Length: 171
Image 1 (cartoon, rainbow, N blue to C red):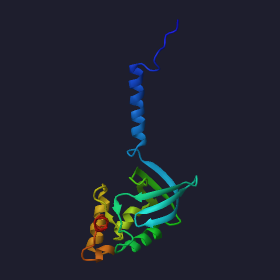
Image 2 (image 1 turned 135 degrees about the vertical axis):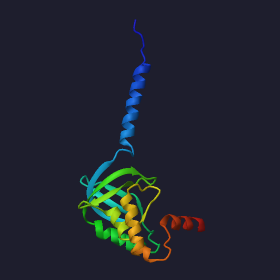
Image 3 (image 1 turned 30 degrees about the vertical axis):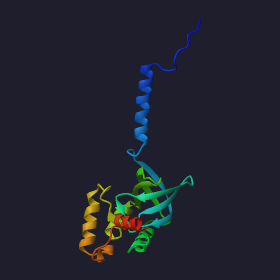
Image 4 (image 1 turned 60 degrees about the horizontal axis):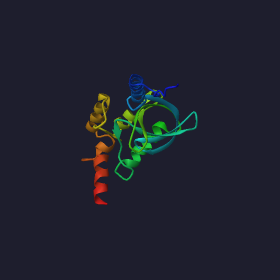
């Protein structure tokens, strides 16, 4: 007489569930991933497209910064600046998470230089205070502001998050 046994007893199920939970956590946003590839597109001052060695395209949103929107003052200059920094070049992206649009969010390094930080130094991006942690970004923004570089040459530049909000409200 054979007895039907459950596939898992409670202890095995609990241990398996705990293991899966740990693996899921490690593969999520908290686990950084390095991506290497060539920049094949620049959408604006804080978004690029990277083609990896397997010919997969990755939409990358530069972390810790927020650049002017394309139709905003300094939007085109910001895009051109980022293009000058990275377009056609091999980069390393330290991917930290994904945003609600599916873009990978990360720090972009070109020849070891932080392109995200360079955009702030050039006065062509704000520190995205809601997500920024690196104090070097805050110092770079203060220096650009004090020296009236880029968008800081304007008396009261509108941050992109406010610009986006007013565009949505007025529609």
